[in-house]
Image (cartoon, rainbow, N blue to C red; front, side):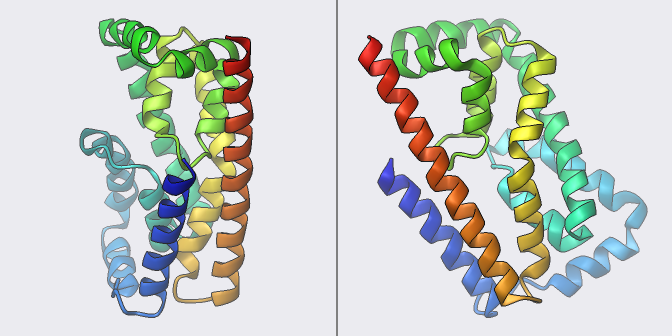
Length: 212
């Protein structure tokens, strides 16, 4: 897990640095021009992208950053919240169908440790998974819903737990070309959140292993 976390962190830092120093060009002005010309459709297209990403197993992080680049940190964060709710709702009801019951059986047989975590700490594990970089959040949402969590608890958990990262990623997007200091502080904040979430995740796993 430590290797995976290090790989993700280094990858994000390298790509962001390449974009910031224009080694990997991303024409932000072109994106903003497109948004201004298609303003009545841009928000809808962005929210739809949150749904489409599920078909290609694309995480939400790139869209959060894109939202900050395209719409600014506040509007981008709001649109990402709407997209998160819609994609999370789709995952929930898909999981609660027959597919979800099969997934629950599979988890009980093949991934007992994670299954125990979900059964014992359901919404807490879901909240932790939304900010932990070593956990595929969409898959965790799917499996959490399969355990029978209420929709209201489920959707409030993913929205609230993900709020700090949505704001930070949106802020990163707007600061790619504006503030090296702001960009650095955002990365440090995200890194601290990641490290803390991984430590808590490992503590919970240890407790489950000890009790079984």
